[in-house]
Length: 297
Image 1 (cartoon, rainbow, N blue to C red):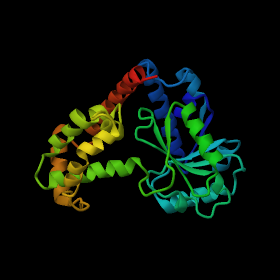
Image 2 (spheres, rainbow, N blue to C red):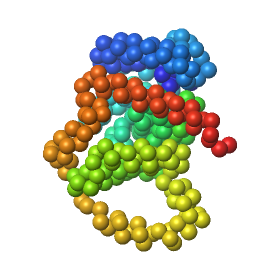
Image 3 (spheres, helix red, strand yellow):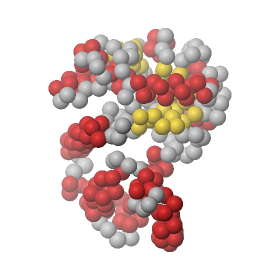
Image 4 (cartoon, rainbow, N blue to C red):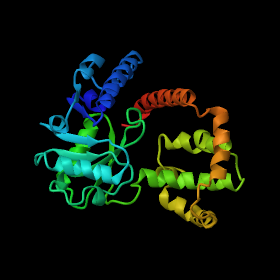
């Protein structure tokens, strides 16, 4: 949908043909709803964008003439390596080979490929139509032009690419996310706060400003600049950080406690979860509109 919104022809391939049919049906529904809500991305109409998207019965046909290939299969290293080895044998020296992996290291994912200079991780954030960030993570042998071309393409389709200078487990987004999840879990497990109140700290506190400014700019603004903040608060931060516990085990007992609290608001049956996700996406859509109106020039 994002690539079609940018005016690019898109071919979908999957080993299960029903997956392609389901995807095309869901895309049509989504695009029509987005158009009705005035939230369809790009300058083309829904029908014009839909005309750019088609399914392919085999991988050779899908990649023929492609400038960019985005792999989106399950998070299984051996499966992804198998697919990239298959692509490596049929692509030319110009196409970009990109993975959507959220945590697999490029050095393992693209190891031994002839076209390794054309390989990169371009990790989107779920749901990518409403959250524009893309993490670009190169293999140590990825050509700088591959990173530049991928960055330019993601900008063209309306996303917000950022460059990870060298690979690290979890990249950047998940390292930050897991740090938050880890401390949230410990605070609940130790009986310091209830699961629902913990979420309030983010939705009614930190999340309010993090939607517009990041943690480093928050520090910069919460004093007379970054140096002033560190002078004032570094000792206090270190004192608190030393009290952080070990990595949680994510025990079944705590998981059941958190799940019970979560299910009061959102029961974990498919219907309620789907409705809540739809509400989330509508909120993100409205937030994206607001951000576009208030972003500084």
